[in-house]
Image 1 (cartoon, helix red, strand yellow):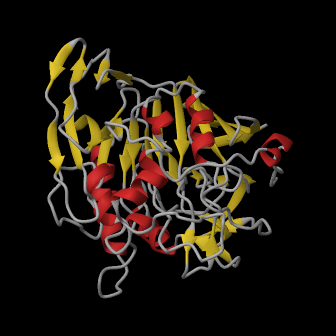
Image 2 (cartoon, rainbow, N blue to C red; image 1 turned 120 degrees about the vertical axis):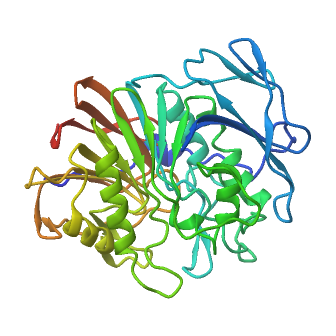
Length: 414
């Protein structure tokens, strides 16, 4: 049965002003810990020299990952975090270290402030009720996660704010230092100090959009100036009791407009060979999902990924798909238990999509159970046993909206 919730009174009442960037410059501008294709790294964005980092009381040198370039006049520093580390500081501030077998996991995504001339959408970035990401991030951090799964689309300020529009007045835009600071580096800082992150690339981080910043700040592999490729190869984060495979679905077609179905088929075959325990697959675009698009029209996602699954299947050990792209919260269980649960968390702050009528089938399979929430929020996953997870859906202020229990490839909401 489809369940939809309305905004809480506290959410509606709150309309605090938020600044695009902090009034006082800080150094480092931002630091965080993330899983990569070759282990765990700490990263720091600075204007000056790389900061001092300590791990378990020992000094660790942070090296320059990316030097200043036009539009991104800053430096990005990085250092490996050793396995089993217990404490970590950067510039004297405490940061989280990876926890083996994480038991509380935050899922969040589609967080940037929407300023788009092509869509005619101008979100009020200067109002925390209209763009609540910073306060949503604080609420999510207060849940004390062991790990953060970030489902992509960090940068949404792609056009100048129209003259006379006070909601987004003076906002930066484009793939540059100022926009990354306004949309993610600064408002996400409560998440940075809460838990290590697994980050995936969204379609807003393609080469023609915010890809330059993506490769500079967040990509899971070493940075090379000028590097920007269509899609990254998948990689796997080993969490101990289970693993998360990260697929790059930012682009669905190549430069000539040809579908990338064959590429995704090869990636699924590769993951099936590499994943040998409980596993989740993390993509920005969902394999299966539905909702309104930016024009308000009904849309089913994502036919190209569905074709790849029909041709080669999903890894046998995968029981959960974690995605975003549709600006809502959605979880789907299919009648065919061979299909994993599909969870979509794309309501982290960017302008929400309008409601649509529920459907009962996607790609030839009947939907057994579903929940859809058309409001800002995030999900908290709590481990309850072997292959058993409780998934709690919260609004931007932390109020519980829905609760579902995932057991293998089955789901029960209550």
